[in-house]
Length: 359
Picture 1 (cartoon, rainbow, N blue to C red):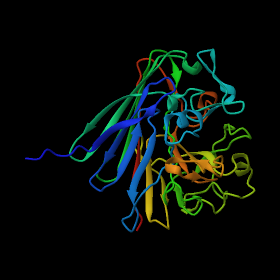
Picture 2 (cartoon, rainbow, N blue to C red; picture 1 turned 180 degrees about the vertical axis):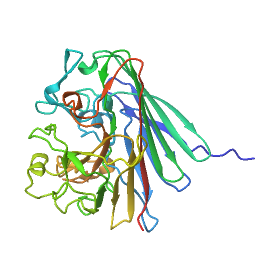
Picture 3 (cartoon, rainbow, N blue to C red; picture 1 turned 90 degrees about the vertical axis):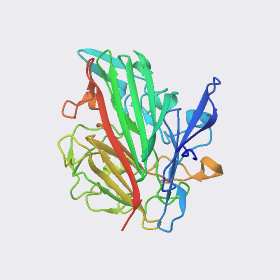
């Protein structure tokens, strides 16, 4: 009797500058879809799904080697932390103690600092069953890492199943009060990773409010209705329909680079946050989460001719991100949902990316 074929293939993915090996984990489901994840930064390096004609294409932007991800990546595909998004002036206070972080984005701290979770090797374990397979990634971030207090034990579990659902389970504990905001920073292009502008893709965001920002993309503290503004995606519309509007918030971001406060349909459970459809390929992405916010980013800082994987090049607005999260700069805004994690508590969260075809 022939043994069933494993859903997971493991192979080398180059080495770190210090010689440490990077490993790739490829998961294939029964639909023929594939996802590749590396233990460097928990980076999703490729995701291959079929279009309406049954043709398979890779729909996430990426790079070819670990050195590129460390030196020249705008967080392609990575787990970002300890604090995803921005913290104003790299400072926050817990119990009267002020903590200072590296300011790696103008005057602000971004995505965990200079050597955030995206640039670290995670410990990896694989698992599989009759309907799915996955990888559990673990990382210990020591007290004082990039300025953050507490020794943090973080885990991220990726599960890819036969319904083309990618489930991401986050969990973390700490031995000292700290702040935490974990997210996934994949850039998608539903027409294929090197297919050019994403402005024709149609987006729905299940959010009636968003958090406006200042010129350095730090929230002002307000949570503002989207109604009668270009920030309103409650009814699906092309991403590019209003993106070049002279609305001040779009001027600040060079397009969309904002956090939306999600309209939750359940008390604390996972609910639909976003839906993106490609009229061209017929591919559809739905995002479900239990997080309070989602950062929608339209690749405004991707320059034309940026080197991509497999000899391709990427361009301006060549990918979009939907980063489920707590709000940016929450430690400095008491009216935002808290990101404080204390000893004895466990942070846990789930986000699901579901890939299918539109009707």
